[in-house]
Image (cartoon, rainbow, N blue to C red):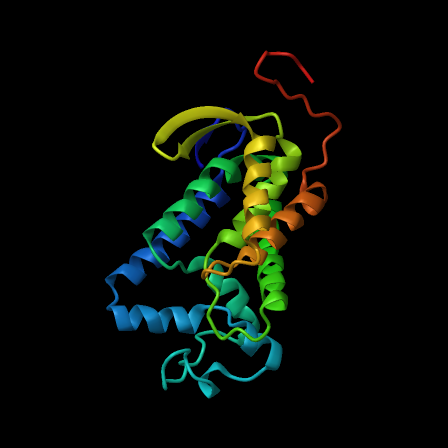
Length: 241
């Protein structure tokens, strides 16, 4: 299930969304020009490592799983790795998928919150997602990277604000591939259900970070939404609601 676009217009240019995508793309392009060893080191230096954050033991004091090598020191002070990790990705599909979701859903949330509020919301959603992951995997020495947790917060906010927006979605079902329009409440609800179903499965994916980010957006979106006396939205039939 891959979203392609939505039918939800905006009233302001999503400069923060575009800026976040540009930063993520720039960091990923930098990763691509590095050698494999240098890229691995970059991930170790910028990722958020739960065990380090919980125990306050420097990553340079414990070994990389499966090797006799120790982690290189972080590029930033320990708490800031929770933020630097949001802009580092593990491959093209990881980065591309995250940026696609951010582009489709982020512009509307930025429109509803305004530029400054949206940036704060995005970073706090990513922080909340990272903290949930750290709590769920406190002994893990594997670096957590990716914008997924912050973007999950955007999805949770979209679920609340625009449940009836239609999302053009590419569906894969065995050998059947089809593009259909799905109400956002169903598409995002299924996305969240998948995270819950996989939360015990590991597989190198921070499922609890996705869950934490989504719940952050779900419950706190109204705190960041621009104050307005009245909001008029048009559904697909052209009726005011």
